[in-house]
Amino acid sequence: MVDNLIVINPRGFCAGVEMAIKALSWMLKIFPTPIYCYHEIVHNDWIVEVFKKNGVIFVESPQEIPTDSVAMLSAHGTSPEIKEKFLKKSSIMIDSVCPLVTKVHHEAKTLSEKGTHIIYVGHNGHDEAVGAMGVAPKSMTLIESPDDLNNFIPENPDKVALLAQTTLAISEWDNILETSKDLYPNLIVPRKSDLCYATTNRQEAAKEIAPEVDTILVVGSSTSSNTKALVKTINNLDTEVYMLNNVDEINKIKDLGKRVAITAGASAPDHIVQEIINKIDPKKIEYFINTEEEEYFPLPIELRKIYKNTEVLLHQIFPKSKINKSKRTFANDREWTATDALVAL
Ligand code: SF4
Figure 1 (cartoon, rainbow, N blue to C red):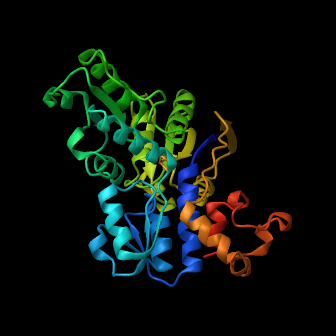
Figure 2: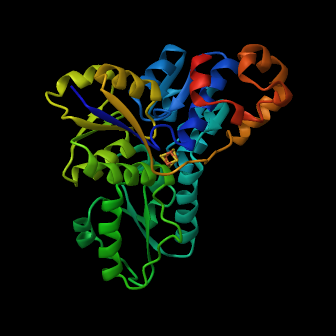
């Protein structure tokens, strides 16, 4: 029996995931199905299944979509070449890339245009890394560990920059940053780290609570990079850690210990956290708030334009109780959460 369960904050949906889920949910209300989505909209099995059941077909290339179909690009970012292909093949295309990923794409483009070679720290094959590397493929080298730096020989060691996937473990990034600085004294790094606020906040909160508990449960899917980074961060400490994709997976844990904490990756829905808490049924529940998050990302511009023209119809489709009557506009989508949008499907 667990004596004490600490629920960690912040956890779960980040602003980018909120935006992408709302965008795809609302597309399902406006356009006929199927809607084709390039890559999983966010890396969570439960959310992907919900969208599949409601008429979304996830694809891995623009060749898979029929001509003139409706398409969405995922939150992880898409290379300019692939985006162009989707644009040509679809009648409507909405890009739900997270603005923090766009920031990295912008950095890669600007640096490569200045003749700088970019070392991109990321996970080979991950959707975000594939999209970012596609921005300037001839000027970018992907590395996953400090050892990979040994195989990188730049043309001009004074013109080297370091960029990163937004969802790395802080320790992964710090190691490579320090080694790169030693190798390249004139290394260019972004003024603000590419690791996003949601990734670092969830890791910092878990690090704070780790010494207080026997076990930390991390809710999220194995496809989610920031969830895996959270697990990796806790693994570096002396605390047992388990990644749970759903409530049933708790049965695989033989002994949770007396003091347990729970958190969730940035794409994990909170109802799974609540189901696990109910299943554990601890004697006492406490809440630990390490930092408050107020980030908000507006819906993709193309979608906002469509809403503007179809607002009257949309107000008939979505549950009115969720909208403050004085602010009944979809441009004001702060009134809605991703969970509201999923429930309304
Ligand atoms: Fe954006 Fe970070 Fe969320 Fe990824 S984890 S969608 S980069 S806020």
